[in-house]
Amino acid sequence: MAYREDPHLRFLEDMDSEDLNGLVHCLIKDKDGSPRLTEELTGSEKYKKYHPDHQKYWQEIAAEIQCFGANSLATLFRGGKGVLYEEILRDVADKLKISYKKSDEPKDIEEKLLMRLLYESVNKMTPDQLKELGHEFSLSDAVSYSPEALFAAFQVIFKAGGFKSYQLTLTIVNTVMRSIFGHGLKLAGNAALMRAASIMTGPIGWTLTGLWTAWDIAGPATRVTIPAVAQVAFLRKKHELMMQGLIKEINEELKNKKFPKKED
Image 1 (cartoon, rainbow, N blue to C red):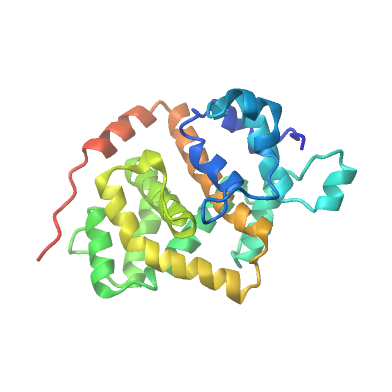
Image 2 (cartoon, rainbow, N blue to C red; image 1 turned 120 degrees about the horizontal axis):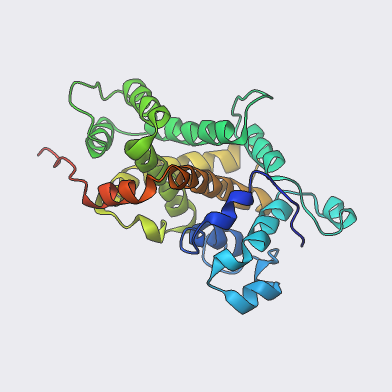
């Protein structure tokens, strides 16, 4: 396993070890918490030396993503190097039947992937779940709580950036982790996030199960690359906020945010 210089994964070097916990977990553990038989990360010298200080071996983490997304024989001929992240991302998007343009940047495709998961989830919710989720994101009763209207509102939130966009991204990725691994991100212990994730876990879980079955993508590599791509998408959004000097302010707002109480 060797890292290929990758412009779309290099930002991982700026992330804290705590930020990388979820990504490392989905690379080395399967859904029941057992070690993945095909992973190589835990056998690397830097992992053995520095674990759990993930930041010190971010290149090994990136290399593990690249190798999971690659053909094993082709990786052998490349001297143990996998494929670039953009190729992995586009493969995941193709398997999930997500429409994108050839000119789209990875960030754009990641956003479309998250929106697809959200769309599928919203369309599987009951009217009560839709209203409750709307309340968790402070959407007023002026917003129709139909799947179409709620998804449209979430699209606006997502594109607007800032606090609510980060909250929505974190909720989606946290829910993906809960659906696949039975637990969410440790950094997402906020009560409001947990409520939103609990509403979405069932529908997103059904969506992912349907994807494994209907599109025959239940192979071990894809079961790694889908949650890994979701993790990278979340980390990229957090990194953008870090570069803008906004992440501390947003984390504090998320911590102290008062969400409306549910109606009886």
